[in-house]
Image 1 (cartoon, helix red, strand yellow):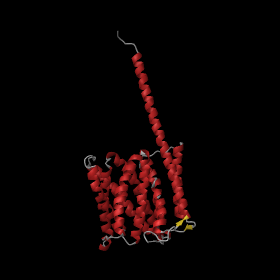
Image 2 (cartoon, rainbow, N blue to C red):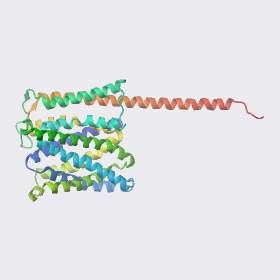
Image 3 (cartoon, rainbow, N blue to C red):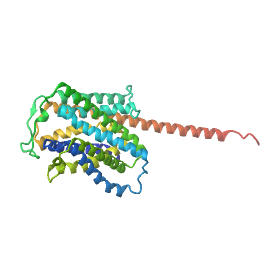
Image 4 (tube, rainbow, N blue to C red):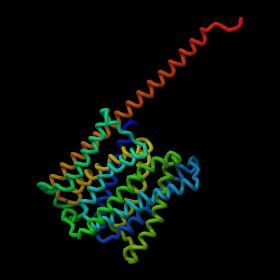
Length: 361
């Protein structure tokens, strides 16, 4: 069961993110400002994690140095404040379809940075290496299918969506000038780069500061402070800052506790155990779960292109994970063999030393 925990963790993480996509989509189309939403989400996550840190890591937390805090603060700025706010801004200039497809390029970008920083290895001459590269290519094919092929549309499974909301704007082409579209694509590139670097650099910081709850809480606090200044700079309307007993409050609480609190902690745990590429390769599950839930909860129409793209993403994900598992098993066997050879050499040297005659009688 212990070996399956990382797999169960990434499935839970992507399920939580899928819930965030559905709820956020509803409140953003209801008029909520995304910068204000980001601030409230990080603030709720910080408040949620404080008692957990005091309960579980008050006595055994790793001492926090000023340099480590600066690294965590910059991590929060890079992977939460910049990545999320720039992503939402990019959607204004492009389309939701392109944004969703772009985020599924996260595994490729993370794999690239992991190889560049020598945290991941690729040996093309071996079967696991070929499987990892082929899986990445299949994932990219799935992204291209989702982006540029619609095909026949399936009827919604329910005509009475749970949220009582249905919007086809996400499936319509975005009317924008070429200049704005280029700017939007550039912003998406910045967001993906920031997010993938965040995943890779977390693994480095966690080696020196393994207290994951405190690590997550400090990231939430840092991003809440940063998001407040971003929100106050772009949104001065007091009405946008008000929360009532409605879907907005539910979404803020859900995203603050489950996304910022629970999923970020699980993400740090998975990265520590399996590495950033393993976590990034689970990103396509988010889109697949969102597609399935959208059919039931939002009553959205699903196209054949979405189903084919989802199948390709699953196949690519399985191929990369299979390659990583094979490489890890080979490394374990190689390490055990090296240890056995070392012990055998030491035993032979001891036998030779004991059989030699004494120099003086």
